[in-house]
Image (cartoon, rainbow, N blue to C red; front, side, top):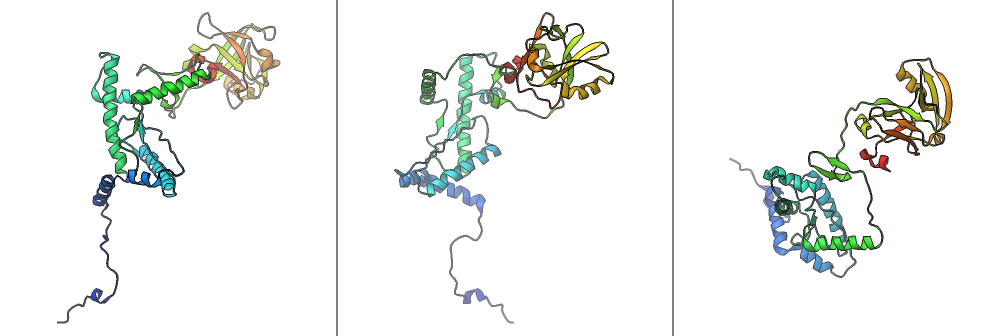
Length: 341
């Protein structure tokens, strides 16, 4: 019987020990281990020492849990940039860091460690949070190294390090001496659950249906411009829960405002938005009483619709728009920076 001939033995081709399959689950840890053994980061830095510097400052992640896809995207992009400059002949050190302070760490520590912060002192709470943060610095370090990110992983910067905190105070002192630091009032977000103020970056917005309402403010002092009997400035708001904090009504200085009589009452709204407001009233019977520029109404005083003894004064600002509503904006300084300003 004829045997099948193996013609590969008759071909004069180069032979390689390079594996034909990537076998990545096995090879990746081996490569990472090899890089660790030869200290690849130190070798590269020795090669490029003294050359033109490229510094990428690592905005640090919170040390409050395992890394997620956002961390992966962030670190991989940084790694690509640093390696590109390094291979282009730059001295491109990369010092990773972690933010070990802040509410996210406190919240996760309280949740995972089962801490009742009302039953332990602030010093003990800070110690627990510190230990928790350092634990996840080590965990995240290994997870980032597993991604192949090259950096000075043995000497990262941590915001809880005493020399780092001292440097923060030093920079703060420089800013104070230059007059950049001042004490003042500012509206801030407050978390009722955490019982703490929130930074803007800690506030998450989500789409939600919100009731929009029209509210009339009775004029009690027209400053010689508006009548006071049965006369109302009408505001429109999508945040009715902020009405108890109302202290002012904002008009645009250059818009024309129409005062019209409807069913025995006089309403003041922006003239351009009057047709839409009339549709809300559900009537076509009305009479013009007068027209005024917003700047002519500054200082007019209205009565708060349900908070006894509180007045609401008319102020002016160009941020008022005619996109929707009445052109009269309810101002509650305690609920927003724009209102406060």
